[in-house]
Structure formats: structure tokens, C-alpha cells
Length: 469
Image 1 (cartoon, rainbow, N blue to C red):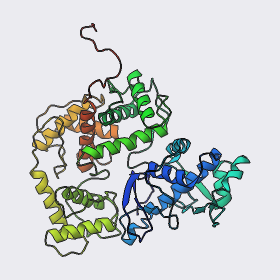
Image 2 (tube, rainbow, N blue to C red; image 1 turned 180 degrees about the horizontal axis):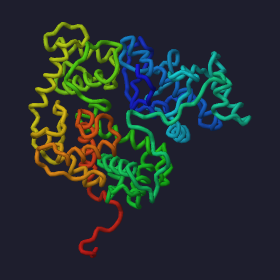
Image 3 (tube, rainbow, N blue to C red; image 1 turned 90 degrees about the vertical axis):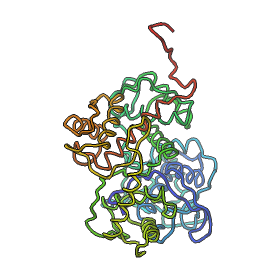
Image 4 (cartoon, rainbow, N blue to C red; image 1 turned 60 degrees about the vertical axis):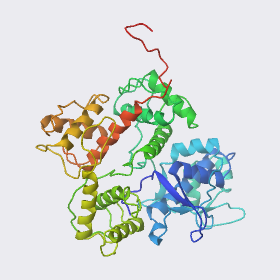
């Protein structure tokens, strides 16, 4: 179980009772909450009543996910659609506009008891046909009409010792900018916004490309933001507040998964080749992330090994992947990563990587080479790194270009450090571990594909040659 709750990128919902044979569907967390809210409550209710109910639904779902309630029982889903066990979820249903807007504003908030980390298991019922010890959905309506805020309503049902946690990191992507982005804004948040919108526009051609993507929020960026907001049912005001920022993040993650083989790669901590101890179900932390990264990548090439979520928590799915790996390679099938299993996992991963061409080809990225790159390193991996950094430097002015020599010297170290500072990458500055390599190749990929425009997909201003239209 992670130490601090985060908002997951997606939720896997079992469309039936927990023990019932039924399909699973995976949707983004905001879309899951919008579906539940549209299925559980009415859009005509007072807004504070709607907000109180949505916060209950968010906290309920996060409690299931944070505690791994179903996965710890051996199920391959996070929550069910059964109202007897969880919350109502009707796959494919219509989502109400005002509910969608509210969810976009508050889906990264939840309630908890003071002094607790765990999201509150916020039990609720309709309050008419069914009564319970938690929140009464219909009971929230008169309270809101009497002027109560959402939190006052929630305290009425759950007690005065609950508190609201806001601005929770989303899917490893960090928090929204501290102030909304609009025309005239500048800096790293704008650079990230422009990179993501350009990448999204490759899949959604109605969103114009941003030229130049310079880190300055000008008319081109505003037009792209408005087009995105219109396409995804947000207020098309051209201002990037939390709702727009997180919707862009969710769509960005989705389009990357369509084309990026490594989209489930390492997202936190670093890669190492040393196993300090055996790993088994219930373990968590850096070394579990590393093992999951290797297993996930091997699973892309070996059909017998299932894909797993890379979250640093050794749960039932990771255990099953380990068992599948052990069976595939003739090892004792224990589900425990001991020194022998670790050796095999790392060597299979390395063997795959060694068969991937290491020469630089524009628009193509390769996985982490399996060795840490630092001052004094040399070879094709360093040459690749330098090419990636130079391409990124063309869009992010804080990152200096470096000579492509294949030798990791002080200039390369400085460029790596500037990249890590700009994108908030953890770890030793100037040293390229798996985390930094993955981040560099992801940004490179986003920039490269973000610049590929469909016919007519341009920002709406005249292109000129020597000043002539």
C-alpha cells in the first residue's frame, strides 16, 4: 500500500458483483466518477449537494483503490459496478454536463479523518428506499437549500473530524499550476502545456498546432486551448485552470498509450541491477518499481508474461507476473523474486535491449540501456542521450545543446541537470538512471510527434516567405 494516496490515471471496473462472471472495463478516474455521479444523483440538485455527493463517491473509490481491497483478494479489478458492494457504474451511459464540470474541478480532492492518511470509506445510500449509517443522498438536498456548503453537509453525516484533502497529485503527473495559465503567462508550466497539446493534436487534428512552442502563452496557445476545451466539453475560455490542466493530462496519457510501447515504463525512482533482498507480495518501494519495469517490458515481447501496473506495490498481479516468468524460464514457481529470479529477469530484459538498434534515428526512442550514465561514460547510449537532449533543447531554452561525441563530459552533465531541474526528476543531479532516461525519451517523443501536423492543422495565422504571403 502506498504511503500517500494519489489519484490514479485509470480504474478497472468489474461490470457485476465481485464473484460474478462479467467483463472488466478500464476508464480514466475522472470518467469513472462522472459515470457514478450521473448514475447515482440528479443534475438538477443544488450544486453544493452535488459536490457533497461527488466527494463521497471519490473518497469511496479511492479507499477501494488505496487499500487494494479487491486485488488483495486475488481479483483483477479495482472496484465493481454492483451497488450492493460498491457504487453504481453504467458503462457507456450519458454524462450530465454540470456533473462533468464539477468532477473536473474536484476529482483530485477527497475526505479523510483528521490524523489519517487513508481516504474515508464514505458509505452512502439514497435515504429513501435504503437507509444507512453514512450519507443520505436525498438528505443532502434540503441541507444545500438551507445554505450549507458541501463540507458542512458532509460533516453532518460523517462528523466534525473529517477534513478535505485538495490538490492531490494525479497519476504521477504532479499538481496543476498554482495560478491559471492564460495569454501572457510564461515559464515551465506553459512549456509542458504546449508540448502536451501538440502531442494530443496528432490524434485530434481539430486542435491546431502551437507554433512556436516557446514557453510563452500567446494567441496560438490560446487557440489550441480553446479548441481542446470545446472538444472535451469544457468552458472554451482559453484559460488553463485545474479542470483543463488535468483533462489535458488525462487525454495526453491516453494518446501516448496508443502509440508508445514504453508508456507503462518507469515513472518514479531509478533503475538498478542490484537486488538487496528478496521481494514478495506486500513489499513496496523503489526496488519493486524496478522489478515491475523490467517485467512489464519483458511482457511486451513474451506473451506468457502478463502486463502489470507499475506502482511500486507488490500485489497479486505482480506476483502472478513473477510466477509466469518463473514458469516460462524453468524456475521454481514461487511468486517471490529471489536472487536467481532477479538475475534472470534482468538478463532477459538486457537481452531484449541489446537486440534493439542503438543508432540514432529521428523520431525513434529506445528503452533504458540498463547501465547508469554519468561523467566518464561513453558509447552509443551516450550518443543517443546527446541527440535526444539536443532535440529537446530546440524547444526548452533552459536546456543547452551539447556536442554529439558519445562521451559523457561536463557539458552533457549540465544538460542532464537542467533537464532534471526543469521536469522535477528525482535522483542525483547530472546522472542518468532509468527514471531520467525514461523522462528524456518521453519528452523527445512528445516533441517529435507533436510537430507532425495533419493537412491544414496549423495555428490560424498566415505563413510567409521573406515577408510575402
